[in-house]
Length: 490
Image (cartoon, rainbow, N blue to C red; front, side, top):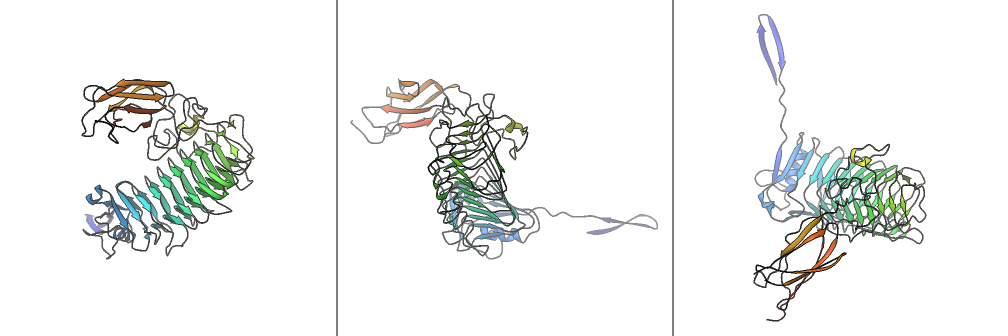
């Protein structure tokens, strides 16, 4: 506003006082996908986004206490289109609490040109890429010329022609941080994700697994990586294609990949893990595991010419070239099963004796590498475990904690929930088999168990049958309890 203030006789000062509007917070209060044009006490997610689009400020969308328990918002046949010029942050309550479904009738989210958006804490599913904004790209999420950051999202069960889970196009930047992209399908390229030429995608601390591309040419079971792509502290597993590369098909202008694990991916053509389709040396790899993939004969893990920055572990180099002396070639990384090793997504944990342990470059921790550093310092691994844990960074997405002795214990219960006294419990580990008995309240404990090991713990009882439990020891375990399955003899 404009205000006139007389300070001295005959002298007039003009003082401009500017009022800065505060960011508006909209609260979603229901699961119904309505749109009456107003976000008030009765506000849908769509109404909240429409209101934010109409605001020139940096707006926030939160969710009411209704979403403290698991809820699903099912879209009514059209995607939610974000055009907000002032910036928008959607704070979901958690991917276990909120699912937004396209109901296999539309895409779920479209982020349009110029929109600067962050979406976190929800699950995107049931998207099929249908939209007024370029049908066929991005089953769940399409970033068309905007800047989009996805954090703590699960993008799963979506389909599209290109980029089954997500697609980045139109001179856009897409940041995927601490996310899970799984079980998405593309009839064309990029089962989970496609990055178009001229665009930038940054992936960090994420698990991309069990995605499928049905393209017989470009493929990319997990990702078709054109344009500029950086990937760090992330895991690609169990992705597949009938075309080029089970995990990553790269034909871009720049790739920097640091502390990534690519394993158990499948392609019937070219590399099971990575296929580089260009001869240009513009793909920089440091501290990565690429092993245990299934590709065409002679190239099971990787194909193409890469710029190795050193300390990569390649299971089978096949026809790939330009590796350096510090790379570990044609050896097994000795990885455990793909599963829950802590953190938001599944990972591969290097087993004791793995050549990946304490074999990487520490420069990734403080960005002191001579060239092609990751976008951010990797002071933790994909799960949030500190790097390095034993003086030297491990190769791959997971840092193995320095081995220490801990205890593993829990309680053996009856069918009524009472503790089972004097019951035999056994523990199988790489070091052999041990046993102990529960105390009078049904509790048991094994001491001096080495972290980083995989165990099988079981119970032997004449009264009840108990299923064995497999566990990876990352720290102290005090709640490995046993409930009876089928009653045996009473």
